[in-house]
Structures are given as C-alpha cells and as structure tokens.
Length: 470
Image 1 (cartoon, one colour):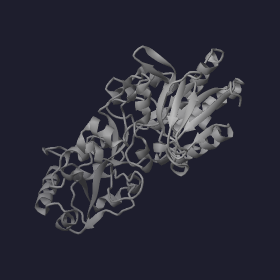
Image 2 (cartoon, one colour):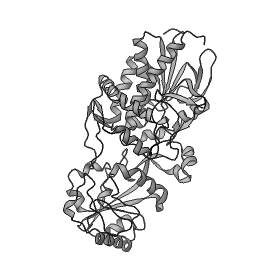
Image 3 (cartoon, one colour):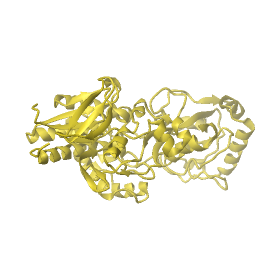
Image 4 (cartoon, helix red, strand yellow):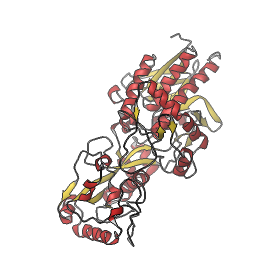
C-alpha cells in the first residue's frame, strides 16, 4: 500500500466494527480505490468481539430474505414514538441484503426455537454471535485489513496531513495512528462503573454484566466521539437488562420461567405482575427492578413441579445450576433464606386468587388465565402453586447494553451541533437510537446493517476527498 492511500480506522471488533471494516475493504476494492484499513480492538484476540461474541444474536426477520412484519410499527411502539423513523426504515430496507452478504461470508442462519412464549419471528446465526465474529474476522484478514488487538484508542486529535491522529495504548505500547476517516463501533458504556454510576445512581456500578465481553464496553468511543464534537442521543436512562441466576458461571444464564409461577423478594412478598406480558416484554423492567429496588438486589422465582410438565421448559433456562427443590414450602424457604411464614402466606393468597380453569394454561402465549382480586395481579399463567416438589430460582438483574450514545443519521454519519461531522461514522451500541425499551431481536441486526453502511459510506467520503490536500 502506498503512502498516498487513504487511511480508515475502525474502533471495535464486534459485529458492527467487523462489518464496517469488511464493507469498506470490499467497496474500495470494487472501486480500485487505494485504502489502508486498521481495526483497533481493546481485548486480546481470544476474547475479542465484545457483546457479539457472547450473544445468541437473534435477528428480527421473518426469514433470511425478508424483515419481520410490522417492523416499523413495532420500533415506534418499543420507543414510545421517539425512534428515528428514517433510521429504522433504512434498517428494514437493508436487513435482507445484509443477511445475504453475511451468508456469502460463510455465516449460516436458522430459525431458532425461542424460549417458550411466542413473539416476533426471528432468525439466528448457527453458532450465535461467535460465528459472526469468526467468519467476519477471517474475511477482513483476507481483505488485508490490519487488526490490532489489546490496542484501545485513548485520544483523538485533529491532524495535519491526515484529518485525525489517534493515540493508542495497551499491548502494543503507546503509538499514534493517522486517519482520514474513523468509524466508531466500540459498544455502550455498561462496562464502566463510573459512567454507570453517573447515569443510573450509585448501585448501578455493582450491576452484573450479562457476559464476559460486556465488560470491554466502557464508553470509550462515546467519549472520544464527543470530544470531536459529536452530539449525544438515545435514552440515557435506558438499558437492556435480563434476569439471570447469580450462582451460574456461564454467559447470560437467564431464567425465563418466572411468568409461570410467582416472584418474591427476600421478605417473601410479591412485587409485580409476573404475567403482564410475554417474557421479552417484561424482562427488562423486571431485571432493573430487582437490582435497583429489591432488598439485597435479589428475587426468587417460585414454582411447583408442573414446571417440568411444560414441553421444552429447558429452553427458557440457561443456568447450568439446578433450582432449589423441596417437598414443602417451609423447606424451600429455609433453602433460599426467605421467612417461611411470609412465603406460605404469599403462596396461599396467590392460590386463593388463582381461580381460573388451569386447563387454559398455555406457556406459549398470553392465555388470559388471571388472578381474581389479587394485588399486584397476575394477568396470565395464574394457576395455583400446589403440586410438590416446589422449586425456586434466585434471580438478579444483569445488564447487556446501554441505550445512550452518539447521534447518527440513517447513513451512519456522526452528527454534531452543526450537522454531519465529516469523516466520522458510528454503528452498533455506541449509537443512541433506542428509547424506552430495547426492541426485541434488533440490536445485532442493526450492528451488522449499519456497520456495513458505515464502511461503504466512509469509502465514498474518502474517494470524494482523495484529491484534496491533506
């Protein structure tokens, strides 16, 4: 590569960053445009990939060649009407072509059996997010993209000959890289105790992380982009969190059978409507409530042996640790250190209110089997907890990613107070496009789609400006 080749730096090695680097390399190749592309990754090679590496990577598609129906409407519902319509329209229009592009790179897809309850249609890469990281990292190496592991960007300043100068640290030592354009794809800030504390309060700093890769997402890209004039966007009080088994050593050990029983706190008291919606409609608020509002930041899902009669119930449990199990509620209460008299009273009150016909119970959809006169109510799946043995799963809230990030448009261009910031792009969780609740099975899809767009747009920008003096 000649010294005159344009230089593009991508910060981040997850789905968004790898898609950006590969799309840029392919676009430059097709246009015979000389370019040097470098990917900076904070983690070591064996751990690289951030959230992507550990994610099941469900994508909200009816099939590989078409987006799920009512996609635009659902994005607005999830955000309370605050979602950028142009951004999500672009996502919908580019979803199928991006999936086809990933398939050409060797990523194979299937239709997953998703937990128990019904929901929007989804596809999933075989092997989850790890398959995306592995296939795309192989492809970017073949495309002569440089990947620097253990090499976080620590500072970006205006350059002279090149537009930007990036300072890095880590395993390669301190060094400076020049860039004509930069793509930020470094994730949210959930791995930063300081930023979590600042946004969500002091207890946020102790919230569990959903996966080992989540800890690398410390808001670096947000801070660096902000230093270059980027505006902030998204819901800075928003996060995607899920209820997990704190005993587990696995990644994302979710326990999603709580709608089929009751949930109590350390005092043996119910505190929410466990059946207020399908699991992907309740898990986010539930997980946050446990961490921020329940004594000790823990709760317990209480069920009876009929859990084991639900076909495929195992799909809704990713913890490798068996639940607590006892022949009586008194014995179960002792195991989980909840007052036995309080737990017995709670279960008795629930059972007395669960007067519907249990034959209507349907774990796959909202069955309308509700309690009568109970506060808080249970709107679905309310059948008495009466058949021994009784089981309990401990639950804590774990964060997957934050919603607040940098402002971008539908072309993945970074936005500042005066509009587009030339030569700067962003994709994935570093961008602030989610509000209210995370739309189910969209995070990984948007990472791939807008990562690819960012790479293509960056090359367009560099080609237009290649003849200008640097």
